[in-house]
Length: 249
Ligand SMILES: NC(=O)c1ccc[n+]([C@@H]2O[C@H](COP(=O)([O-])OP(=O)(O)OC[C@H]3O[C@@H](n4cnc5c(N)ncnc54)[C@H](O)[C@@H]3O)[C@@H](O)[C@H]2O)c1
Image 1: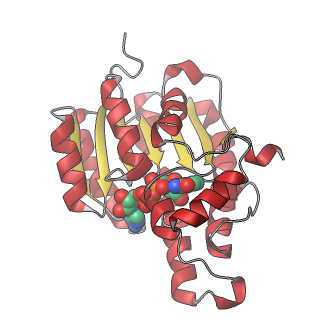
Image 2: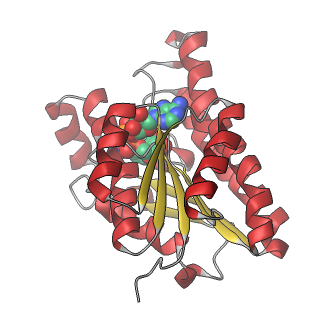
């Protein structure tokens, strides 16, 4: 049997990068998937490619009101949502703390931190009614430590916050059979990493990783799939690092 048979998942930031790869793998494993993103063109094209078990909805995760619309439309199409992957994120500029302006800083708080809170708050009542669910919050290795190559203090702060909110919500909703875990990717080859750095910077970062390479998005998707599935039925409040050994040093 497919590993997500019968499950309905909402994946944010699913138009490109890791979110897109999670959506592909989830559909391959039998889930019906709502892909949400601000990038309508890429999101619509991917949902079409994935077929009848995928639905794309335009969605800005930093807008609290839009969450109820996305959840209502997704539920109408596929039934109760029992998996939420809070993946949407942006990294902001490479900047030292004294150089980071208010607008850039606040945008990361709004999307990377508040977006995760709005998502959990909106999805929980339906998950309780459905008898349980799994929330996977995508933080970062930068949510564990401020590593060289991390763009700025706003990103690191938001990703630490995601780790903390994950634990609080896991403890509060464990009795309702809702699991909440955070995932902490290291260096993953997606548009986010490519937009932030040129090839020489990417090569230099790879040299600092014990496995001497960036990960492919699908390597992270396999971890997210495990956390979404019933195979991880006793795992909650955990932080899963997937970084080629970088944080071990
Ligand atoms: N790439 C890495 O090395 C890396 C490492 C650690 C953590 N992460 C995290 O993993 C997640 C995915 O990263 P990625 O590398 O695939 O990024 P990406 O930039 O390749 O894709 C991110 C997606 O999120 C969407 N998005 C941005 N703002 C949004 C908003 N307000 N509402 C809805 N969608 C929005 C974008 O349109 C895009 O489709 C992010 O949370 C990121 O912080 C990435």
